[in-house]
Amino acid sequence: MPEDEGLALHRAALAAGASGHRPFLEVGTYCGKSAVYLGAAARQTGNVLFTVDHHHGSEELQAGWPYHDPEVVDPRTGAMDTLPFARRTIRDAGLEGHVVLVVGDSVTVARAWAEPLSLLFIDGGHGEDVAWGDYRAWAAKVAEGGTLAIHDVFADPKEGGQVPYDIYRAALASGAFEEVSATGSLRLLARLETGPTLTFPHRAASGPRTPAHHQTAALPPCVPGPLRSSGPMARPEFDPLARRGND
Picture 1 (cartoon, one colour):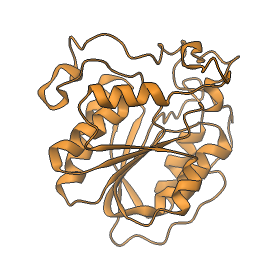
Picture 2 (cartoon, one colour):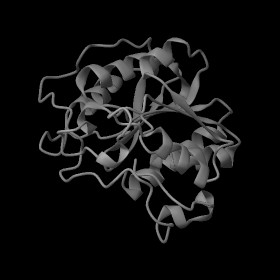
Picture 3 (cartoon, rainbow, N blue to C red):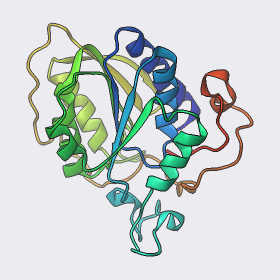
């Protein structure tokens, strides 16, 4: 997640947290970078972030794809396991009291989830079935006046996969959300207090259905990098942070 998008997400979470004490929820933890932005806001507002991921990697992160990181493969099982890296990121950020790592399939967790959310951030797998499953499972749980954040939204298929863009358009077309802001590929929508009941079409428009990530080059390693030196991780609201995750 680029710095400008992370800071926009952080500001949105600060506003959502200030409006009440309903929790934040993130779909797609990976190694915990975006959870630090959200978790810092949760800490500042006395709130809690629940971040959901099975930690075995989405389709576009598996072996054979350009974004695969072999360093997160468990040598015992041969499968990806980003949970240790996410735990390290949250621990080193000093956010364990405000970030709860929920390990499991997003849709399965949603079936048992009853608490309305002040902010929902959808940034899980970008394959069609997975991404639409996340949206259908969680969008209706955003409280009235709450925020829906969607990452990797690109209108131009040359810049990235179209499924997040289709979901963003479906949320607007539902009449239940209105757009608040756009920063890079991040879209922030507000749940309308007078909006209709949500409906969930399978897809919003035709177009490429690849699970491509928004980046055109390989992702940096998931393994947490060096001590912050500049940018948002050096700012007081994110302190202390000795090591950071990738996404």
